[in-house]
Image (tube, rainbow, N blue to C red; front, side, top):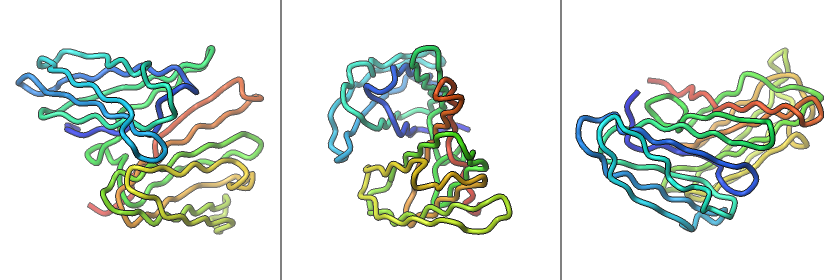
Length: 203
């Protein structure tokens, strides 16, 4: 679906990031990328005019700190991010409300015991987000729950220790709009897959 604002919860030195932005509007687009550190302070930005249906690869390799990234434009855009670490590659579209990857209630349909799960929750609202992370087992029983307030454009990272080595699901419920990204490391860390939380907000 068309969007003018896209979010990437993580860029920086841990993975080698590559992002391409496409203007899918019918006029030249003024595109702005802003990276924010863990304190939500802008640490890097770049602008470019992108012609219709052409691509731009912003130089996100210049971001040397752990950060999140927001891409905005005055035309509709699409973007894709590849994260490289050795032979492992994760592929994420830009999260947006229109694609139901930004919302106040996100769902992850799988937790894997014996593997290493890592989540980052990013508050993309101008107000503080009060977020509850609900871990259920395969029977649907709530086995763990964590709650935290996240300041605007700050993030919260949750790992396997907080998930409890459970086979089940994860739900994130927030008072503000959030993006959730999950990495699953298995086979001793040799294989990694990633996904965005699916928004379950009512239409």
